[in-house]
Amino acid sequence: MGSLSAMSPAEDPDAGAPPWWRAGVLYQVYPRSFADSDGDGHGDLGGVIEHLDHLEWLGVDGIWLSPIHPSPQADWGYDVADYLDVDPGFGSLEDLDRLVADARARGIRVLLDLVPNHTSDRHPWFVDARSGPDAEHHDWYVWADGRSDGAPPNNWRSSFGGPAWTWDDGIGRYYLHNFLPQQPDLNWWNPAVGDAFDEIVRFWLGRGIAGFRIDVAHGLVKDRDLRDDTVASESDHERIRKHGLRSDFSMNRPEVHDVYRRWRRIADEHGAVLLGETWVLDIDALARFYGDGRDELHLALNVPFELSTPGPAMREIVERTEAVLPPDAWPLWSGSNHDAGRLASHWCDGDERRIRSALVTLLTLRGSPLLYQGDEIGMVDVPVPRARLRDPVGLRHRPDDPGRDAGRTPMPWTAGPNGGFSGANAEPWLPLGDVRSANVADQRADPGSILHLCRDLIALRRQREDLASGAYASLEMPEGVWGWLRGDATVVFVNHADRTVGVPNVDGEILIATDRGRDGEGIAGSVKLEPWDAVVIDVR
Image (cartoon, rainbow, N blue to C red; front, side, top):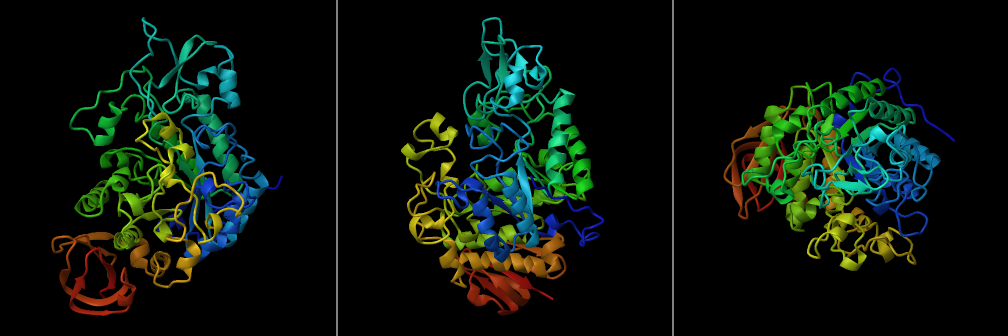
């Protein structure tokens, strides 16, 4: 079994420069849907390796791999049965080592998805835990007696629907699962759990992994007394109202910050990055996951931004985030992922003008952009017939709730059979939709494509210090236009209005525009923006 040594700070040629993830662009790879190298209809590590040239050409600096660990796949890898290996469906540890080495040779780091909130019910820890109350791992999970009438211990609800508790006949108690019953929650009040994950983190960092995206980062620690969650009120966010509860005791406990202070010390020893799936709807709560800006997460998912709509609401969230983050903290911006679907659909309704302006926004704000595979070609969600659904959320819910599969369909590399994702004779695990409308090969051949816009924006970030690390300052704009200054001499204007708007008092040169015919255009006095136009201007 081969292994890779993590680069120490002393060996890093970039030592002393800002961390790579600050100026860089991150890219989520959903391996099962990225590329199928062995023709079984499911993507794999070999497929990622085969397409590293695309990621290098695009210019991304780091890739986050959604879970690749051994798993029964009840929740497509988020039910981990072994944290220290690779699921055979994706390849082997040696394949992962090769991916890490080949990516690093191209200047690309690899992050893994770490799932510390719960395991699979087939993980050896849980198999042992349910063998008896005196088992070594029994208290590694959350168990509780039922109420006097036999009902579950409290009102906690699974994020996937129904009670968050399942009765275990062998133990004669309930166990907690904030997601599927096949995903029992770990007991982070037990120090042995933290010790085990310290070792897991060190194992992967020692193999050259550059960091982790931490699943359910807000939810690891539960209320020690298992108090009822607060019932949602009309003043709560619609997502909370839909769930019915605030999840303020089943998740979102303050003790979780102790975990991240501990992991931050380990990560900093290796020059690694911690990116948290912080599913909170309040910016002040989000800011707390950064600690003092140097002692907890390096990056935290901004869910309010992701759920917002381009325009005034999004601007308000960005400016609130800028106002409350600690001085040394660094924002993270994303519009798509395997749970939320693709920005081309939920932000842009598939409209190319809006997709282009959304990419300009995402790639020019102060912070680290996180792209999801397909964002670079403006890929939209693909409707999946109910007979083809694979997501447990869609399968458990009503027929009018298809779940998350539409945002997980395979990447279209070409306009050919199966979009080049898999061999012509394979049946992809999810349907691809119309691969002729958006695919990598056709857009790479077209300099005016969304793909080239995305690539050129990434290159511009690398070329201009203003965009890589400059401050953000909001500008007063005509109604419908969002404008901001980055650093000393780079301004961005995005017209969210359905009418032409003129922005006065501007002199400079357009560096890049959604209308690529305007690249290099000189601006003297004012700039005209058509509906959903966006421009990046050098105003020196």
